[in-house]
Image (cartoon, rainbow, N blue to C red; front, side, top):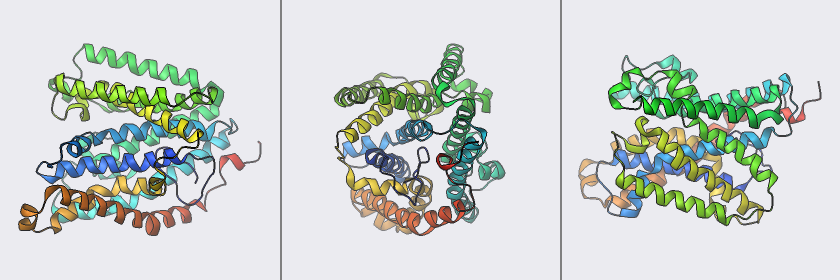
Length: 377
């Protein structure tokens, strides 16, 4: 398996790739799908623990960002610090993102036109190219995360050119600027709903707190590489403590609108869910090092994580439209929820095998070989 940040690149298996990380990719995509299905379902589920997990599914994005940083560090640590290596690296990552996104862009555009959801406020060219765009103007709102992935790849390519061994001080500097600016913005009321009209691309994109999760994942790889024999239990314990802290904060915090999932509480989200994600990824790596793969069944489904992430909202809407109103009113809510979610995963796994993977494998043949196989300049 070749590597591509938070998203699996289909076509090749690599023994150095962590199966546990691959399973986490699938679980992150499934978690996001469960979150959106819960929002669209209209009525609450009658299983409290399932409802709680689904309501926290937005944190699958935090997990993706940490995985992306970790994998970018892992896949570039031995690449030559040359412009050519950086260019090839960037071209392959961009191809992966766009070859997966553009078919879904067309599907969402046609569906949106059919149901009257593509208004004049939608910035279609920016959505098509994944340019930094405020959330309401995206054709598919969750595509904002892909813009961040592209930013992460550009930063990684810059680190390659500059010198990969200087990555840590540069990333620490970026993180320091992000923390400092957001501390000022928090103190001055920038994240207050009354000031939402002042939000611009600079604030929510280049210096958005969630960028720290990418930095955290990148630095995590460096930390774990220097401590190869460290056990996994401290990371599992820390992840559990973050879960307790999140549950407590959800009870006592004063939230605006979407709570921790929304823009106004992104700083708290980055600390709590980002911290949880870093600990979970570290535990997965350490378990892999010990030969423990508790979610081996999910590893192959991790190949389809990108398709599941991009396609689940469209399929959920189609499923809900296809169910007669009378049946929806009388069917057991939890059973219907689980069946729809399973159907989404199955269909998008098939889409990955028959559409996403062939498109990428065809397109990648036009690019130079991976940077690791380039001759020295």
